[in-house]
Image (cartoon, rainbow, N blue to C red; front, side, top):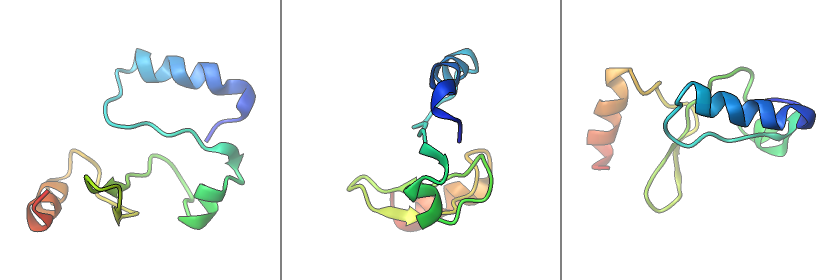
Length: 77
């Protein structure tokens, strides 16, 4: 959640830190509709989306947590 004026700094940080996965930018800081809809109170926030684009978990375990692997196995993803 960054202010629009910091968008370029945000993109540079993604590259500099070699962040994998899909990185999303909230378009209206903490007042973004997405932030409000999913009750996001802090970052990072991990959201699991299946191959069809459906949200499986709006509060998924972080990628390094073995619970994520268990969830993926359970869902056969």
